[in-house]
Image (cartoon, rainbow, N blue to C red; front, side, top):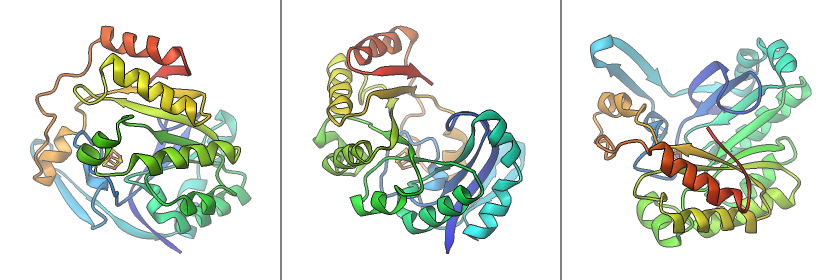
Length: 255
Ligand code: SF4
């Protein structure tokens, strides 16, 4: 089976424990206006030219699961020594759940664990297909408001919530990840509601990911408007205040 791959990054350290290879899959069913990886949203191949630097890079190539296994298993020794593995991110990797399950099964046979980094807005059957081969998940909770989830992000919070509960009940190890976005979810009320939502699904761990503008060059290269280009990252005080609220319900850290 083939997967639509946006990019493969070796020796990544921010996408799970230990030394990892992150396989970014192309295509997403959500439209978060702050998205840090806008080149992964469309399933179509895209070539980006990064103005002043002169760098040109194409994102989006079909790769068989065997090709990906060959690519990522060269670092298997590093995964073993560091407690790392392979992360499937995106985009939304769960849109390509059949290929993701096949890849994770092949990696497991070689002693390499897979972590899936998902926004969770897909039919539960997709998670059923991968759960036998993947026990670690990073699971985005972007807001606790059904209305905002629909209007701003373009998805359905009920589905997200159901899937988080499904994974936890299924015995998966899940870290809920909360992008901390000015104007979206940085009020005390929203933090309280998000923390409660995560805890109510049986998930006890969360990471807060403060908004940053590192993806802005990609928007420019894609010719897309970046709605957050003038938004300042949250200050230390507001992050600390969010963490205090999350701590009432969850084991939390800031990434
Ligand atoms: S779910 Fe992730 S990849 Fe998809 S639009 Fe939102 S931030 Fe971007």
